[in-house]
Image (cartoon, rainbow, N blue to C red; front, side, top):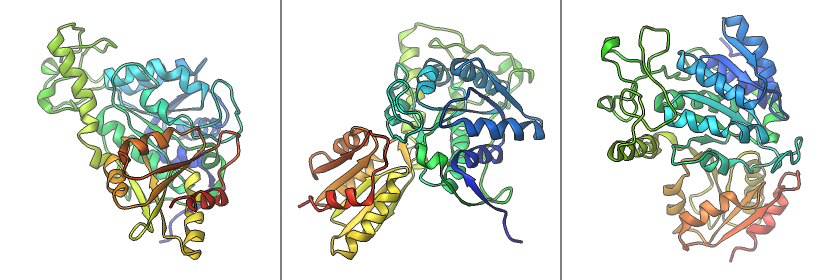
Length: 377
């Protein structure tokens, strides 16, 4: 039997991916260029008994999905730029309270209102450092409509598996372009269920580390009574200021991601076997990079591309390994060097980094990347 095929926008694919992953609750607020996600979810969720709510602002939307997640739902919100800034305090709450949720953020120009209709890649640091305090960070950066669909599913799986907020951050080009998409059959892509407690309700503790770094999470209303707070807490969820408990709790929350980078981090290697010049790119910029690499090869330049699919955790190990083999890196991105800083950290001086930084609302084209590759000696 042939699979269902459609011609979809990136944002529409994101919504469909969320539905495949089992999302039953969407809380959001309209904002360019992500509103289409909310539009699709407002139509589709009622059909399956799910709930859609447009809140009074982005803060309320983030609070709504955290509450729905604690009630047992798989949840999604979508936003961009200023909306992401408004959500940050409650994203931090989601981190410390360990509440699974997916935040789909379409990157546009900024800061502040910036350029609402122009593409950007300048929110990736916000996924790691936007909210205060030490906390885990997972951020996925898809480069096509098909991949947006699949990475949203993966984001739900990661959020449930590691009990933490997960970001999906396409740039505006990926979010608004239309491409052919092939829908997987039910069960073809794994959908990870939430780990729920097996102990009697009277024995349940929401942060019981005897079950490992990711304790099971009961749903409010399921017969389990427990406490959730934004304060540092004990295994029963109630606040504590005991230094040894706070230290252990903070370290565990970060460790549950850092200790599982091989499970979380994904990337694409393109023509790297003999590459002397490697372009490190993500999102729509990687599409220009791939074309530039092909042209460079035709001109006798041993070029390759390393495409970042998971921006956080950053693929440190892979880039460190490349740094010892190549003459240099070219890092094109629609910001003023956010990824380049991370590449420089990983390269540890073993290879020069040449950046192409564009924040004028226009995409980076293949010619720009090709010319920069020629500067690597």
